Image 1 (tube, rainbow, N blue to C red):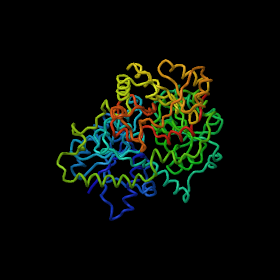
Image 2: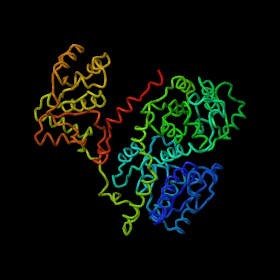
Image 3: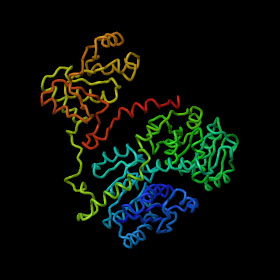
Image 4: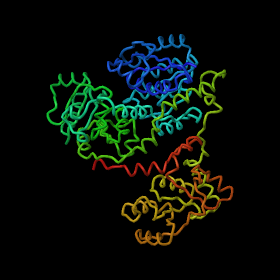
Length: 561
């Protein structure tokens, strides 16, 4: 079995090191031979022999020397020489990483030649294709891939919503987390840059990378951001690309206070300084992810972040290109709690290399002898996963529930809409019930509420929903307290005997079918219900993970007032 891997830049070589290391560990028992093509999309002098040796990265068998250029031109120039490599090697599958031009060029060639495509890091989305042209590469590659080897939990959900079936997705974890853990071990026994080398104290400085065109091409934008960094209340170290240094010289600008511009750093030097820093400021998705892995707070000078998990966990804040917002975040930054469990929930346990190798071997072995081409069987129209209107826990499904209740003369207390965890989704479901001429009951367990139900803000929420539903507490004492706080009658409703929208295993329940089968009281948790119908596969991906939500709530900080 032979697998062809196409890479084009330094981060992809680092990710390649994860699978190369695993194959090296297996030795003669490795399930496939690896052939590596470096397109040369980005020339990088950091790709030295030491770099390959120490991270155990596989040296390329082919170097195409494409060089830089416009995205369209670069992709076009790559395809003919890549076809020649495919013809010469006749691989059983293609392995590609991430979202570079090399990735999408390889996927296009493989798809037209009938070679299965395996895409590591599939499913990542920002939904900003103009500002992030790499997203187009990722979307095209995902939909040409026979198997997406997914690096984050949210990417699994994104792909499910785009119609990918379970047989085309595998959560393998993030190979960069493998490398992060490995480099941490290696830093224990090798020399690397230290804060003292730059007259800094560990834990009392920031480290910064600024490279995206939207932050560096425009003079006012770039100098505004650098000025905010220069005014930080602690030193900020910025390894500056020669291109940025040249621009600053032309603009006649240099830092005066706390920003320190230095030459680019090697991989281990940068890792050493990042791990000992106070915080990270970066517009790089890779560096932002490493900050998350290291438990460092990150400031992202973009309007959206590739790694929204860190933002949702309170470990990152997006400030856009605003110097004022950046300065405010620098002043308000706080050290986070330990986030290892949250990282591993979202990005795996650091064994992506093993899982990638195993999944490739299993996929190719299962496909040998199959004569219907490279596309996965789920690609056949009649087997595509369908998001149907009757799917459990969708607004369309709730419409059926409310209509059934209205037509069958149900009373308000027979349909309980639970707001114990908050009001998310409740107003939408109440509006649907009103459209069906049915008035349900809004239910609250005061003892378990995740907000203060007796506050003025909660009172305003209840008042706003009063015209759409009755209100009940789960016990008499709670009903009395709530009634006094709101100045209106509050009933009592025990949900214990009601049929819930999730069963004991957490699987969605079709409440309309349950009512037709004889259930006379239904318990709805509105935060679980999606505006658009979902497939059974997507529903099984734990769209709301209660444990993870709780962990994120514990970590969330208020960054800006």
